[in-house]
Image (tube, rainbow, N blue to C red; front, side):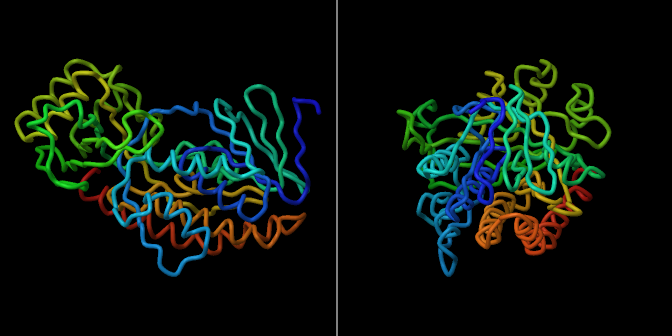
Length: 369
């Protein structure tokens, strides 16, 4: 076969752009319905881990795919807080177990298109990949969203930033290691509110079983820095702020506030992130979709709906996207059935996810803007 063009078997193929949590869950849901599934992820397999996520671990009265995804996400328990890296590891391990699954890392999608018979993408290597449906799971800066919603391609800046830092428990002196169980702690701050978190690490590294001490610092008084450093322009968020690009003046300001307000282990985690420049400033984005589907293309996860993290609903909404899409695709995606399946998916999810994002926008009005 000519490597520059890949034609999958007609009537059972899904292309998923984005291999983070939403993309992996969507790939699993589609593969369980017998679809040949290819996931394209621009980052490498060993990606930097994210922070903690609120996960609904309840397994009562759901279909088999939903039960499986919730079990994978929660680690089999009802704990509400899980590390991004632990969830990603479990989902990736499951996805790789399906014979019809092809996960490609370090693969950037340059463009996408569709016609009456198929949808396709062109990668940065000039490869054209065809499928029956094309799913955008490529996050809040989604490329696929530009094709599904060309009139509204960008998420909007919510008016505040979350500074995130973390440290492994083993890097803390034993006397300062937390005795409390996993979960969140609410802290005080001059400029906003702060969550401290304690979560278990679960991956294929030698550190499996240790805990991660994290801090998420909601800040609405340093927005000028976002614009000066090019992270936000107008209402559009272009990128997060890595510690390596933060000016000393800003780092000193963050360090001063943390030292005046917090105790250990949260203070040590924050100062560790500041001093090692591993702290990350994430401008908060919100996206209320007008539609989730256009022809053979559909959106899931943050590409479809970017809620404020204060709602603690983004991950669970992405899981429900995957479950509903799988149910709809189970009825078949041969020919016109592909469009019918995606339209049914939109009818089940659009109103729900719009309301979810809008519920968090109140936060932006009273805190950020």
